[in-house]
Image 1 (cartoon, rainbow, N blue to C red):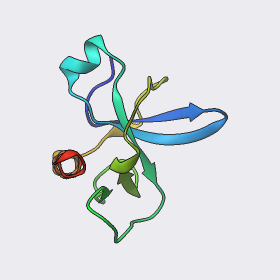
Image 2 (image 1 turned 180 degrees about the vertical axis):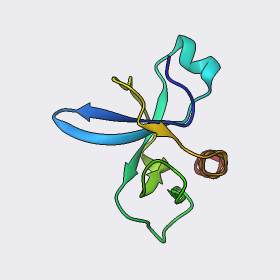
Image 3 (image 1 turned 90 degrees about the vertical axis):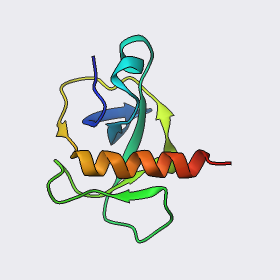
Image 4 (image 1 turned 135 degrees about the vertical axis):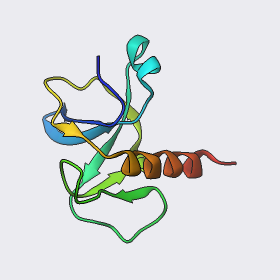
Length: 98
């Protein structure tokens, strides 16, 4: 089972991405997890672009605007920090706020 905050490689139609699992562990046990891709570089951009911290297992920006359901395969590449996951949760809430 994948866990919230884990980073994986994901291939979609021949294109490789790094993604972060953002759905809860309870959800991930029974459903395909929600993931967000990691873009290279840090964007000084809208609230849906969350810069990763130096202590995270990779650099870049989590692009919450591209939230999707996908089944990562292979082993996790690491786990993002709790602070980064909290910022991603806030960004998700901002994107879906009415």
